[in-house]
Length: 257
Length: 255
Image (cartoon, rainbow over all chains, first blue to last red; front, side, top):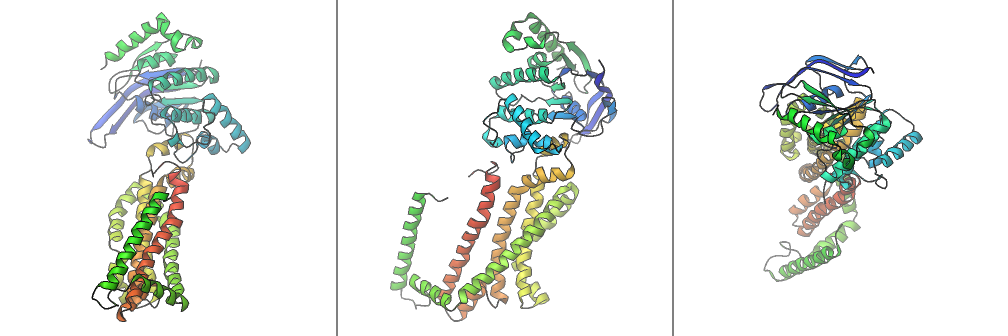
């Protein structure tokens, strides 16, 4: 399987705008992500998880090293890499369906095809009946469904998710995680999912990448050999492999705190 | 919208106000021109409408403020948006715009009189100046207040610069643009009355100032009521619908 994403000797340094200190967020990070892989990334707070995602999205320029997607260096943001942000970055002045259609509008997909695609993803993320609502009329969980649907509808090859479920309530989070698992299985997209929640990382990932404390580099890559079909919370938590892997990852993260 | 109880309350308050006013005008030992009764204001209204003076003056004042509003919309808003696009440019212009916003057109009037004389041009320059600065300033602030997160989200969807301006910057700046227009119109309306007082040959400001020489107190009170009343109408029919259709609907302001 060829590597979809290659990060080599990645380093990133920036100046904190408040303290004016230079911060080395990432240093010498090497990582390959396979085509169609679901890779979760965990690590202690401030280890550069979000920086890593920002660099892959093309929103940040690394100060050292190489970022390749399909063998080509990343030069900026592009529709081949969709991003789901933690803070539901959907536009308050667009209705649910117009937010979901936004990527398609940008790609100049014609009106009828756009409508059909939007309808499909509205159903996939369970927003039927809310198409003409504005974001301020929705709960946090529903806003994040809109954001996920917007990214999926734009059909990127790679999905970058930055703690997307951190700001929704626990019950909704469980549902969204199970839905994302189904979506990942159905679409076969390459997904990089950053989280500080170890359980979530183990539940969702094909592999879990544990980052070291700042400056972040890859500490360990933990394979999670539990079939996707078995990944509902009731089945998953009763699987002895789950608690074994979870404890292992937790220990690795703790060593870095 | 005013609710039914609010309307009732207002009717009672207004009835009390006009009752007290009539009573004072009838009983206080002052000349009639010092405090004319409400009925005198109403008959002044009738007289000025019959003579055709009032419709002309109101039309002139409204023409001036609305022309300035259109200019503010066509020139001020784009200028403010443009200035707001670059952090460095915005930082440079911030104190400058803030300064000129606070030096109102009224403070400029002496200078405008030297430059343009007692002419229509002086009025227009004063009003346009006064209205323009809050519009530019707030449009600029509006652009700065758009969350970078929204811009980044659009960039990751592959949006061009122009599309980011159209889909994110413009709607995101709209609450602030509306504030700027509202302030600009309010300041401009005040400046207009002041300018008409000094240099006008017509308009509401001219009407109340010239009435003073002839002790036409009822006419002054009528003019003042119209200045306030017309503002309420402008605000209610021009600015509120704009806010209702956009930022209120998007949940960006709470009513």
